[in-house]
Length: 229
Image 1: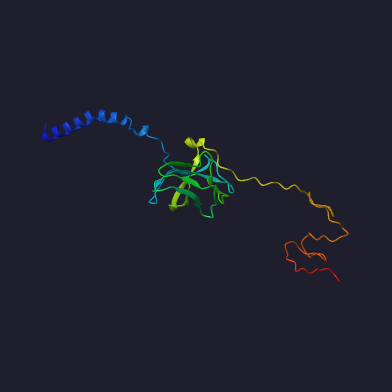
Image 2: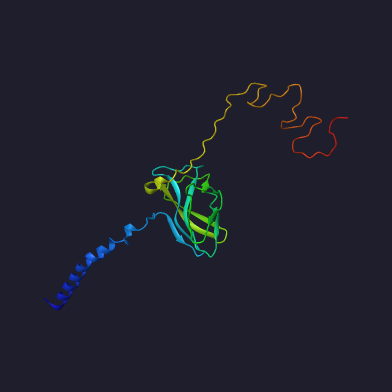
């Protein structure tokens, strides 16, 4: 056996001897599988403004379904404020072509304390979606903080599947209320709840030309009676 061959054999033997020890380290308390699980699809970022975000996502539809136009999509975040003082999450900016942002109330952010946004009840949403969402998209948003200012992030839309099935379903689009009237009304008839006008007297409340001696609603009078003299 040459000198090079003996050297390779010694190196290989040393590696095989160390393998069980390396495997034992992986099975200890520091093993990756023993660490708290954070979904890889969700947003995780540390901003220069002192706002740390983890597990940020919009909850989309069930797997294989679609959030229809007119529906809503809730925002979930885990936020830690690492600034010198307290802060508030006060607003959400989104592209108007997507929908309208709604923040029910400011989110208080004490110093160095983790705050879950969206639990137990979603308080920040995009309402009136102007296009359907299927999940897998990313939405550019501006998180507006009272002290940290504006933080721009891309937040993924995640389908309600796997570990996300524990979250409440995203609000669906409101169902239009059907009309209570049908057919063509007969002459002299009015819609339900509206009194029929007196056929012998002018109606001063309807739109159009006001009757002599009356003024239209909302107009400013000049103190002079407009009736005939």
